[in-house]
Length: 530
Image (cartoon, rainbow, N blue to C red; front, top):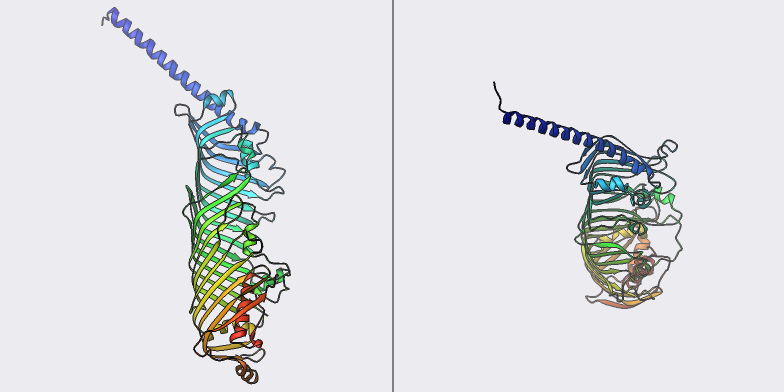
């Protein structure tokens, strides 16, 4: 077959073109392979060469894609550089996959700097073992990277965390950790700040959070989430780690033991951070639903003789900028128990259907004017009697003055036996139709008014260590008790001195006790309990 010169020239051209294309392709493949290999060697060396970087980083495989400017690290492992000499101390981690998008090759080549658009960390499992120097995110993770990595977005998916104490006991666990932070900057200026990472937005969520606060309490949460300033948490539990006897035996002076659960905590908007070096927390509204709180105090423990601060003083002495405009409690129950000895039942005071609104919960930091802090409560006292309370104070008042106004209606006096039987060795019966009081107090004393309307009020004094009635004392008690208020409100002025080593609620009880003493009850029926 005869080929013309033009066809032969064309075939030579195509052949040369194919060879050139093949050569370029092979060259590009070699360059890609070479650069990929270089990158795989260069990345860990950059991190390891950072003198402040405290970790060894290893991985099973890395895929580099030059065209898209991305790479993926598979099965990465993190361990302290001195992990061989300090076994089970410091931070250890295993990461299923690290996806890096749009990394800057020139920054890597000429500046030994890893500059990328985003980093996605998939399924990290991190264990923080105990070490003498406490774990600090700023020192351990942020400062070492200030000259090493720049990124616009960091995402963590499906993470797990465990923190162990010196005895290898778990103090913190969390699962399904998801975290995203955008427009981040870490530099020599930011690392000196309290929050060493500059960012625009962040979101965070996790499940099954457990935090061992101390030897007394553990906190658990089923789910916690914060997304663009909207915070929510569910199934909060503060659980004692000791029974009541163990708790009382482990404290030098008496204190309350708390058991608290809450179905839901919502903060629709929040703003927090640092203004210079001052922490600020600004929350327009905090909602807490279905709180179930039990507060127990054993009086068999030695009294704590330290002066107790009133709430206004506590807020006034906060050293950060706190501003909670409204805090609400809904559909809650609060039970206070006090026990004189282990061979007697505790006295119980309960508040159910408890709804409260607290306004202007502020510290003085960063504020020119501070409105009154006010507390409005509606509840059922002893599961029966409607109770309303209005409480207000101003934290700028150095005398810690406050006012508590209360109204109670339609209480069957037998409901008080849950208190009087354990604490006073007595039972009551009759009807307390209405109680009104205004309690004006400060850190020294209180004055105010007390009024009560009741009928058929009777007392039954019990024999010591028995549920049987002490006939003689009961007769004597009912002779001096004023059984009826004669269809009118019995009013009295009240003035009492504060016992400074007792709580504000003891102060209120002393006031009410004096009002009852003036209007209805004999002196033998009083007590000085918290």
